[in-house]
Length: 120
Image 1: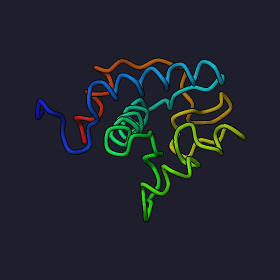
Image 2: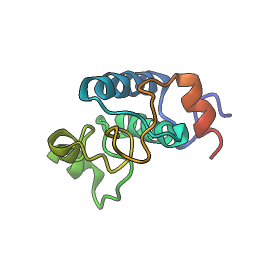
Image 3: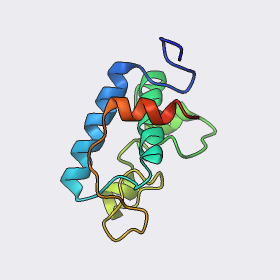
């Protein structure tokens, strides 16, 4: 692994901030991470990378013509409007207990995130 992080990896500071945010938000909203922690890890890593590159945790699971414009509109900044309004997470980071892909975890370590994202 490149000590500075690979091209898809966020800084340690942003990764820790997004990890803490995800845990806190899941607990506060009664949602759970995907049963495949690889999905959770990749999404949190993507949020951290966008936080580093764009200054905001823009949803990493969507395509944008203009990421800076999307950050400014704030619609897709995590937690996005669909998540805040309807508990609909396109990225499968925050899943309601009735979702067939929901796991039982609301916590993940930086080590688990790095282990999962280094597989890709």
